[in-house]
Image (cartoon, each protein chain N blue to C red):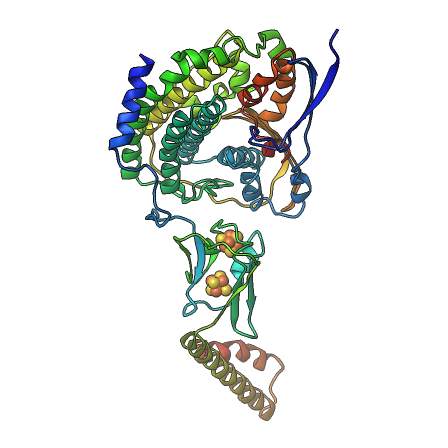
Length: 359
Length: 164
Ligand code: SF4
Ligand code: SF4
């Protein structure tokens, strides 16, 4: 009978990109239990909503996270637009969807880079991030910002993208797709990578469903739940199937994310081919009154925005549930019984965004 | 197979140009870098400071200055979109870092002050003319005491004339 010991892991730890703290209860090299604690960077968004008017709140929502910034702005704006019954012009919807997919590409590429770094493939890591730079360049050209785009507003978008630029984007997306085909090979076929990923941290479909996981983490366990299928924004106009994998291990999650990047390229191309003309915003009059629950699919999974307005320019309540929060319980489950050396990779496979979680 | 592709990567990296870019890169048009104000055009109306979500802008009408706290500015472009005189614009370069939360203050340029003073003067003159016209009207009304309705009818007509 070996003795149990507790290893505190994080919030500052060389392998952790973000501040989460885990108490790992160990028996020899095996993790018996993991107890997470969050709250190191809480920012109090729910209080801030009482001080900023509902238009300014878009900027606050965008700053919840640096990677899914566009999605947060989108979720909040859509929620308010539903309350106010605003019909957003088609072009704005298409561009919003296009940018959402582009942020999926850049988020997943960032994650792939971090994963490569976690198992020590430095060159691959740099290559992933170099490819991601192309996505950021497209963002910078079309929105004016690399990370925080400030392009959403209630009633549409703030900046139109000229058609020549969109044509250029099409070419660049095709190029990125070719490069990603080369880059994805080591992740999927390399033996060293497979030994680190295959069979590690298995989460069964029942567990994933019961724990309420979201995003690629859930779909890698074989559940085809993708909020994009509800057809919000312009997703109703494009053809796609949620990508699933049945193994539920780290390899399946990697595979899912890689396939999702290719899918995102495909959706972007469809959108560019169908891009309608016309206005990009409609004037907004009055103040919102009512409540709405908006669900969108962020790169990391389903995010939920609850907005309650009272007919004044300040919103009563806004609540965001981010995908990482939903996935933490799944993470704790996968950590049970794994080796200590696998903990960093397992934490990584939920694509944690602790700043999102603590909005 | 893996070795072959790895060799390709090494060879490619050896012969290709550096992938890194200089910090002094060319910014695409429309990059939201920092806020600039053309002090020749600004009229110190204060709309920008009302619209700024972070209250980074202060407008002092008495001292004729417009100031911005660049460290508080979040480059949202709200002020630029709302400036009625289009005197604000978004500079391409990012705000340079610093140790302190500085405030940059700009004084209204001589030209703008002169233009504004000229405007004020014109407005004053117009007001004076209107007042004089009114006084004359009142004097007329006083000299010839008529039914109470008559001056009231004439009064709205006169200022309209002086406005032109
Ligand atoms: S809104 Fe424009 S004109 Fe008015 S104070 Fe600001 S910069 Fe000057
Ligand atoms: S860009 Fe935004 S934050 Fe900066 S001064 Fe203008 S309104 Fe304020």
